[in-house]
Image (cartoon, rainbow, N blue to C red; front, top):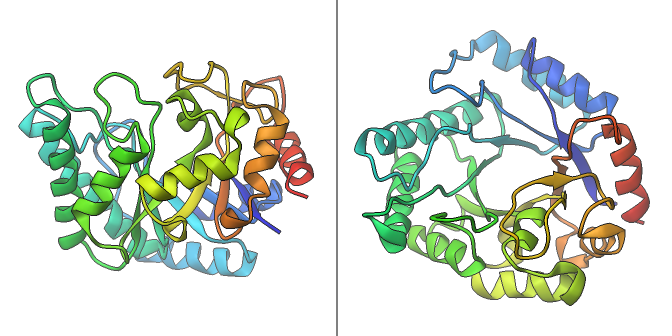
Length: 281
Protein backbone atom coordinates (compact mmCIF):
# COMPACT_ATOMS: atom_id res chain seq x y z
CA UNK A 1 0.00 0.00 0.00
CA UNK A 2 1.37 3.43 -0.94
CA UNK A 3 1.81 6.09 1.73
CA UNK A 4 -0.64 8.97 1.30
CA UNK A 5 -0.84 12.30 3.11
CA UNK A 6 -1.36 16.05 2.97
CA UNK A 7 0.44 19.24 3.76
CA UNK A 8 -0.93 20.09 7.23
CA UNK A 9 -0.80 23.18 9.41
CA UNK A 10 1.38 23.57 12.52
CA UNK A 11 -0.92 26.29 13.93
CA UNK A 12 -0.94 26.00 17.72
CA UNK A 13 1.93 23.55 18.02
CA UNK A 14 3.94 20.98 16.11
CA UNK A 15 2.01 18.26 17.97
CA UNK A 16 -1.24 19.52 16.46
CA UNK A 17 0.16 18.93 12.97
CA UNK A 18 0.40 15.24 13.86
CA UNK A 19 -3.16 15.26 15.18
CA UNK A 20 -4.42 16.92 11.99
CA UNK A 21 -2.64 14.30 9.91
CA UNK A 22 -4.22 11.53 12.02
CA UNK A 23 -7.67 13.05 11.56
CA UNK A 24 -7.20 12.87 7.80
CA UNK A 25 -6.07 9.22 7.95
CA UNK A 26 -2.60 10.16 6.68
CA UNK A 27 0.23 7.66 6.45
CA UNK A 28 2.70 10.53 5.90
CA UNK A 29 2.48 14.32 5.90
CA UNK A 30 4.25 17.53 4.94
CA UNK A 31 4.48 20.77 6.94
CA UNK A 32 6.30 24.05 7.36
CA UNK A 33 8.30 24.43 10.58
CA UNK A 34 7.68 28.23 10.55
CA UNK A 35 5.54 30.83 8.86
CA UNK A 36 6.33 30.45 5.15
CA UNK A 37 5.72 34.14 4.39
CA UNK A 38 8.40 35.84 6.53
CA UNK A 39 12.17 35.50 6.87
CA UNK A 40 12.33 35.33 10.67
CA UNK A 41 11.60 32.07 12.45
CA UNK A 42 10.80 31.51 16.09
CA UNK A 43 13.37 29.12 17.61
CA UNK A 44 12.16 25.61 18.39
CA UNK A 45 12.41 24.86 22.10
CA UNK A 46 13.87 21.56 23.24
CA UNK A 47 10.56 20.76 24.91
CA UNK A 48 8.55 21.36 21.73
CA UNK A 49 10.93 19.18 19.72
CA UNK A 50 10.79 16.33 22.23
CA UNK A 51 7.00 16.51 22.43
CA UNK A 52 6.66 16.48 18.63
CA UNK A 53 8.90 13.45 18.26
CA UNK A 54 7.02 11.56 20.97
CA UNK A 55 3.63 12.40 19.47
CA UNK A 56 4.84 11.43 16.02
CA UNK A 57 6.26 8.12 17.19
CA UNK A 58 3.04 7.27 18.98
CA UNK A 59 1.02 8.04 15.83
CA UNK A 60 2.91 5.61 13.61
CA UNK A 61 2.85 8.19 10.79
CA UNK A 62 5.91 8.78 8.65
CA UNK A 63 7.98 9.95 7.01
CA UNK A 64 7.41 13.62 7.79
CA UNK A 65 8.43 16.06 5.06
CA UNK A 66 9.41 19.68 5.71
CA UNK A 67 8.94 22.29 2.97
CA UNK A 68 11.06 25.41 2.60
CA UNK A 69 9.26 28.75 3.13
CA UNK A 70 8.29 30.87 0.14
CA UNK A 71 10.74 33.80 0.32
CA UNK A 72 14.18 32.14 -0.12
CA UNK A 73 15.57 32.06 -3.67
CA UNK A 74 18.82 30.09 -3.96
CA UNK A 75 19.29 31.40 -7.53
CA UNK A 76 18.81 35.05 -6.51
CA UNK A 77 20.74 37.71 -8.40
CA UNK A 78 20.63 40.23 -5.52
CA UNK A 79 23.45 39.42 -3.05
CA UNK A 80 21.39 40.17 0.06
CA UNK A 81 18.53 37.87 -0.99
CA UNK A 82 20.99 35.17 -1.96
CA UNK A 83 22.78 35.27 1.40
CA UNK A 84 19.50 35.26 3.32
CA UNK A 85 18.37 32.29 1.21
CA UNK A 86 21.52 30.32 2.04
CA UNK A 87 21.10 31.15 5.73
CA UNK A 88 17.45 30.02 5.67
CA UNK A 89 18.32 26.74 3.91
CA UNK A 90 20.96 26.10 6.56
CA UNK A 91 18.62 27.00 9.41
CA UNK A 92 15.84 24.83 8.00
CA UNK A 93 18.15 21.80 7.83
CA UNK A 94 19.00 22.45 11.49
CA UNK A 95 15.29 22.60 12.34
CA UNK A 96 14.77 19.27 10.55
CA UNK A 97 17.56 17.80 12.65
CA UNK A 98 16.00 19.15 15.84
CA UNK A 99 12.57 17.72 14.97
CA UNK A 100 13.83 14.44 13.54
CA UNK A 101 12.48 15.17 10.04
CA UNK A 102 14.31 13.26 7.27
CA UNK A 103 13.38 15.33 4.19
CA UNK A 104 13.42 19.02 3.28
CA UNK A 105 11.76 19.94 -0.03
CA UNK A 106 13.05 23.04 -1.80
CA UNK A 107 12.20 24.85 -5.01
CA UNK A 108 15.29 25.87 -6.97
CA UNK A 109 14.38 29.50 -7.44
CA UNK A 110 14.43 32.11 -10.19
CA UNK A 111 17.57 33.48 -11.82
CA UNK A 112 18.06 37.17 -12.62
CA UNK A 113 18.14 38.71 -16.09
CA UNK A 114 21.82 39.61 -15.80
CA UNK A 115 22.86 36.24 -14.37
CA UNK A 116 21.05 34.05 -16.89
CA UNK A 117 20.13 30.40 -16.52
CA UNK A 118 23.59 28.83 -16.23
CA UNK A 119 24.70 31.27 -13.54
CA UNK A 120 21.43 30.61 -11.73
CA UNK A 121 22.17 26.89 -11.74
CA UNK A 122 25.65 27.52 -10.36
CA UNK A 123 24.24 29.67 -7.56
CA UNK A 124 21.74 26.97 -6.56
CA UNK A 125 24.49 24.35 -6.44
CA UNK A 126 26.63 26.65 -4.31
CA UNK A 127 23.75 27.60 -2.01
CA UNK A 128 22.67 24.03 -1.29
CA UNK A 129 26.28 22.91 -0.90
CA UNK A 130 26.93 25.63 1.68
CA UNK A 131 23.76 24.75 3.58
CA UNK A 132 24.69 21.07 3.71
CA UNK A 133 28.23 21.89 4.84
CA UNK A 134 27.16 24.26 7.60
CA UNK A 135 24.15 22.49 9.09
CA UNK A 136 23.67 19.74 11.65
CA UNK A 137 22.30 16.26 11.11
CA UNK A 138 21.73 14.32 7.92
CA UNK A 139 18.34 15.46 6.60
CA UNK A 140 18.10 15.06 2.84
CA UNK A 141 17.34 18.05 0.63
CA UNK A 142 14.80 17.14 -2.06
CA UNK A 143 15.00 19.14 -5.29
CA UNK A 144 11.49 19.89 -6.58
CA UNK A 145 10.70 20.33 -10.27
CA UNK A 146 8.77 23.46 -11.26
CA UNK A 147 6.18 24.41 -13.88
CA UNK A 148 9.05 25.97 -15.89
CA UNK A 149 7.78 29.51 -15.55
CA UNK A 150 9.94 32.37 -16.85
CA UNK A 151 13.48 32.46 -15.38
CA UNK A 152 12.97 29.39 -13.18
CA UNK A 153 15.67 26.91 -12.29
CA UNK A 154 14.39 23.31 -12.14
CA UNK A 155 11.73 23.58 -14.82
CA UNK A 156 13.02 20.61 -16.82
CA UNK A 157 14.17 17.19 -15.68
CA UNK A 158 17.58 17.86 -17.21
CA UNK A 159 17.80 21.08 -15.21
CA UNK A 160 17.12 19.21 -11.96
CA UNK A 161 19.80 16.71 -13.01
CA UNK A 162 22.39 19.46 -13.49
CA UNK A 163 21.81 20.60 -9.90
CA UNK A 164 21.96 17.06 -8.52
CA UNK A 165 25.10 16.21 -10.48
CA UNK A 166 26.74 19.48 -9.47
CA UNK A 167 26.18 18.71 -5.80
CA UNK A 168 27.31 15.09 -6.16
CA UNK A 169 25.99 14.07 -2.72
CA UNK A 170 23.58 11.20 -3.23
CA UNK A 171 23.22 10.56 0.51
CA UNK A 172 22.01 14.12 1.15
CA UNK A 173 20.35 15.21 -2.11
CA UNK A 174 17.24 13.55 -3.52
CA UNK A 175 14.14 14.51 -5.49
CA UNK A 176 10.53 15.60 -5.06
CA UNK A 177 8.33 15.23 -8.16
CA UNK A 178 5.25 17.43 -8.49
CA UNK A 179 2.73 16.01 -10.98
CA UNK A 180 1.06 19.37 -11.64
CA UNK A 181 4.39 21.12 -12.16
CA UNK A 182 5.68 18.42 -14.51
CA UNK A 183 2.61 18.48 -16.73
CA UNK A 184 2.51 22.29 -16.70
CA UNK A 185 6.15 22.24 -17.82
CA UNK A 186 5.14 20.11 -20.83
CA UNK A 187 5.60 16.52 -19.64
CA UNK A 188 2.35 14.92 -20.82
CA UNK A 189 1.58 12.33 -18.16
CA UNK A 190 -1.92 11.48 -19.53
CA UNK A 191 -0.62 11.23 -23.09
CA UNK A 192 2.62 9.30 -22.61
CA UNK A 193 1.84 7.51 -19.34
CA UNK A 194 3.56 7.58 -15.97
CA UNK A 195 6.08 4.86 -16.79
CA UNK A 196 7.41 6.83 -19.78
CA UNK A 197 7.50 10.21 -18.04
CA UNK A 198 9.19 8.87 -14.93
CA UNK A 199 11.60 7.01 -17.20
CA UNK A 200 12.55 10.37 -18.70
CA UNK A 201 13.02 11.70 -15.17
CA UNK A 202 15.32 8.82 -14.27
CA UNK A 203 17.37 9.36 -17.44
CA UNK A 204 17.67 13.14 -17.12
CA UNK A 205 17.46 13.96 -13.40
CA UNK A 206 18.61 10.88 -11.50
CA UNK A 207 17.71 7.42 -10.25
CA UNK A 208 14.16 6.91 -9.03
CA UNK A 209 15.70 5.43 -5.88
CA UNK A 210 16.55 9.05 -5.00
CA UNK A 211 12.95 10.14 -5.57
CA UNK A 212 11.48 10.26 -2.07
CA UNK A 213 8.34 12.39 -2.34
CA UNK A 214 5.60 12.78 -4.95
CA UNK A 215 3.47 15.92 -4.74
CA UNK A 216 0.27 14.35 -6.02
CA UNK A 217 -1.72 17.21 -7.54
CA UNK A 218 -4.10 17.55 -10.44
CA UNK A 219 -3.90 20.80 -12.42
CA UNK A 220 -6.13 23.67 -13.54
CA UNK A 221 -4.06 24.64 -16.60
CA UNK A 222 -3.25 22.69 -19.74
CA UNK A 223 -0.23 20.53 -20.54
CA UNK A 224 2.70 22.88 -21.18
CA UNK A 225 0.78 25.91 -19.84
CA UNK A 226 3.46 26.76 -17.23
CA UNK A 227 0.56 27.45 -14.87
CA UNK A 228 1.26 26.34 -11.29
CA UNK A 229 -2.31 25.96 -10.08
CA UNK A 230 -3.33 22.78 -8.33
CA UNK A 231 -6.70 21.05 -8.64
CA UNK A 232 -8.51 18.31 -6.71
CA UNK A 233 -7.56 14.78 -7.75
CA UNK A 234 -9.31 13.74 -10.95
CA UNK A 235 -11.06 17.07 -11.48
CA UNK A 236 -8.34 18.72 -13.55
CA UNK A 237 -6.39 18.22 -16.77
CA UNK A 238 -4.58 15.11 -15.50
CA UNK A 239 -7.77 13.26 -14.60
CA UNK A 240 -8.30 10.07 -12.63
CA UNK A 241 -6.60 7.77 -15.13
CA UNK A 242 -3.28 9.64 -14.98
CA UNK A 243 -3.43 9.97 -11.19
CA UNK A 244 -4.05 6.21 -10.94
CA UNK A 245 -1.16 5.59 -13.33
CA UNK A 246 1.21 7.51 -11.04
CA UNK A 247 -0.09 5.96 -7.82
CA UNK A 248 0.20 2.39 -9.10
CA UNK A 249 3.58 2.63 -10.86
CA UNK A 250 5.71 -0.01 -9.09
CA UNK A 251 8.89 2.07 -9.39
CA UNK A 252 7.28 4.71 -7.14
CA UNK A 253 5.94 2.41 -4.42
CA UNK A 254 8.64 3.54 -1.98
CA UNK A 255 7.66 7.22 -2.22
CA UNK A 256 5.58 9.35 0.14
CA UNK A 257 2.62 10.77 -1.83
CA UNK A 258 1.70 14.23 -0.52
CA UNK A 259 -1.43 16.01 -1.73
CA UNK A 260 -1.38 19.81 -1.92
CA UNK A 261 -4.92 20.08 -3.23
CA UNK A 262 -7.04 23.26 -2.91
CA UNK A 263 -8.94 24.17 0.23
CA UNK A 264 -12.43 25.10 -0.99
CA UNK A 265 -16.06 24.01 -1.10
CA UNK A 266 -15.58 21.74 -4.12
CA UNK A 267 -14.09 18.87 -2.15
CA UNK A 268 -12.59 18.35 1.31
CA UNK A 269 -9.22 16.85 2.17
CA UNK A 270 -11.00 13.77 3.48
CA UNK A 271 -12.74 13.36 0.14
CA UNK A 272 -9.45 13.77 -1.74
CA UNK A 273 -7.98 11.08 0.50
CA UNK A 274 -10.88 8.77 -0.38
CA UNK A 275 -10.22 9.35 -4.09
CA UNK A 276 -6.49 8.73 -3.66
CA UNK A 277 -7.13 5.49 -1.75
CA UNK A 278 -9.51 4.29 -4.43
CA UNK A 279 -7.13 5.12 -7.28
CA UNK A 280 -4.14 3.54 -5.55
CA UNK A 281 -5.72 0.05 -5.51
